[in-house]
Length: 334
Image 1 (cartoon, helix red, strand yellow):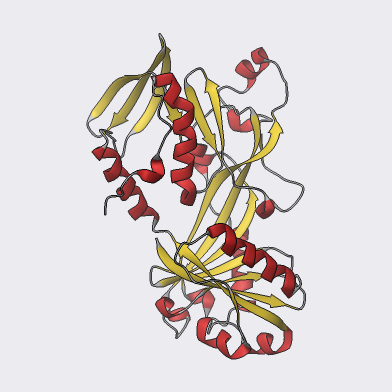
Image 2 (cartoon, helix red, strand yellow):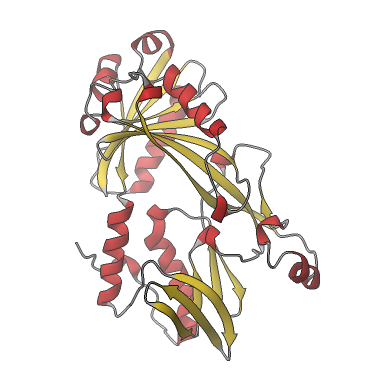
């Protein structure tokens, strides 16, 4: 993690400034003493310093207020390596570039068949936790939205300012959707469009329409230099968002016969949502899909330690452990 300031402009067409300030103040209070500076109100002269990519004419014409608050940027690849090293100190083993081909009930547990460059391997386990989100064909008990977000990566040359010297910005497009513009690994990241997943997670791509929306934003709001010619990469990612609704009661026999091989065609997964998908809670739901087999839906990478504690507390009694899970007390490896 590394600190990353966020600038939040409030324009005439948006929410009132006092409401934004109340929300950010509560954000600070709930964050606790994390060592980051608190939220503060910016004057117009400070905006050009923190976000030189903001169009000056729009700032002069439409800006009602601007706030600067502190957040942190997660380096996901580093976090994974750190977590893996910490786990090995506790006796955990892990395998990379390995595909799980089959999980079969076996007595009071499961037999798992895996394939890697070293060939096929079988292991047995009393419990299985599926944290692979969309890459597993499990029918959820909670209805989930299959959601896709698309992002554009711009080269450093799209701005004269250096990414490391700038704050990130959250801005609202004309249709009400929030778009972020973030300094990211010495480049610039802009996102996101949100839509329902078309097809299945293993055959996902970014259709041209998904690029059109963020590009239209990039040419209208931030003052970028030839954004169309400075796009380095376009990528999209899918996730499940639990809708906190019970899955429809369709009968076990019908489920097995109709959807067990094509779960993403079932009514348990939705492709559309009547409302703002970005306003839905990202809080994870953990289900026991089968006896001893737990599946995680939703959640955010940044909350992986808290989520690990919740899952650990559920499975610990099954393994005869009486001590509560203490993920927060584990010393992290650098």
